[in-house]
Amino acid sequence: MSLVLDIVDDILSRLPARSLVRFKGVCKEWCHHIQSHSFIARHTKIQETNEKLLIYHCQSLGFNYAVSICSEQQEEQVHDDDDGRTMFHQSNHQQFFIKHVPLHCSAHDNNNCINRIKEIELVGTCNGLICFCHIDCKKNGIIVALWNPTTRDLKTLPLFQELTVARGTYSLNDFRRGTQTWTDHMGFGYDCTTDDYKVLRISEEEEHTYQMKIYSLRRNTWLNFDCSDVSAEICAPRTLFRKDKFCWVASCPDGIVAMVILLFDIVKEVFRQIPLPLGITNDYYRNNVANIFAMHDSIGVVLYCEVKFDKIFQIWTSKNFQRSRPSWINMANIGPHSLIGRPLGFWKCRNSNDLLFLLFHEDNETTTAEWTVYNNAMKGFYVNDKGQISRNMMNIKVNNRIALPLQVLTYVETLVSVNRS
Image (cartoon, rainbow, N blue to C red):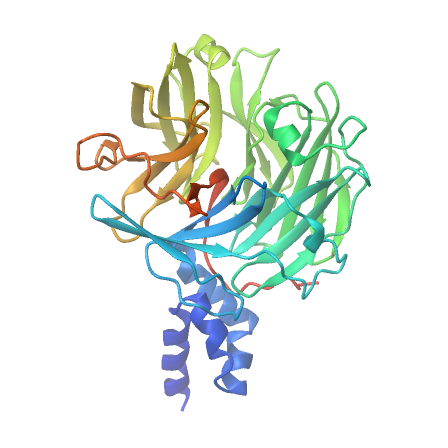
């Protein structure tokens, strides 16, 4: 009998999380087994290579915001209120399916405030959980929530009041456009030593002086952390979590090196710095923009600048970035080109094993917004039948209008619960 159970367990652990949500209704034994901590941990480990794209976008001119998931295979409908609209895109022999996911879950919404939110900021994803935040300017605080789109579990974190912005009523777009300054940097990750999910928030109190709070899902509380020894200044809004490390692009105005990557070890709870790719002068860093992105099991740094109306990109990657002197590989140099926009991130396709570099192009004259996709294996952009750069691949259309992608993150579907306290 144990052999049969082992075979069933092996089969179930390799199925998509959406299928397992339905299979919990087969019998009580399966429901108990699928919800067990050991099974969820094993299933999550297997799903690590099956990355999807999580796309947060504006879906209409009325500034309605939504979340969509892009994958290489058709998604099955699990919940009764699943959006049945699935868009299909095919380019250069690759298929992509984009499905809308509603954000109106309240099963564990302990503060009963998520349904009032019209726009959010994605903090990060980890093991199938999504962390997002919303600036509540009326309360001068930040609402932070953890959400599993597959199981529809959602949990809002205890509200903290300190928000380092000027007084007034502002929308999140004010901060995106730069009309207001929001000096908070937030990240979301997993501590494998304590089996705990943690949210990190750093705020700049004064110039080069930071205050940090760390939220523990297991304890359900925020704790203060001393970061007085941090000398670098975080200069990019993106926070990345890879291999037990939170990562930021930072500058050292008083140091020999102009820019570095600032790391915070979630296990050892210490800060340190690592250099960006060698062979690039400090003047290059000062005159250009650097940003950091997830690249499967490694990190990617994109350096880009504008020359007249064209953009030039340098893509670097490092798998051993946790070392004091990491090795960097120059994956690609793109441009100069006028039809490529700001970088959104990377996505490794499971079927073709190709690494895609996603960019977003917004035409101010025609008020259109389109994607461009660079395939690193092909060393070029996807093109249409006329040999021109394809700028409509993976576009999300709502009411015949191209949606504005605000953020793109890689994401895996799991059964990890937000209730771990």
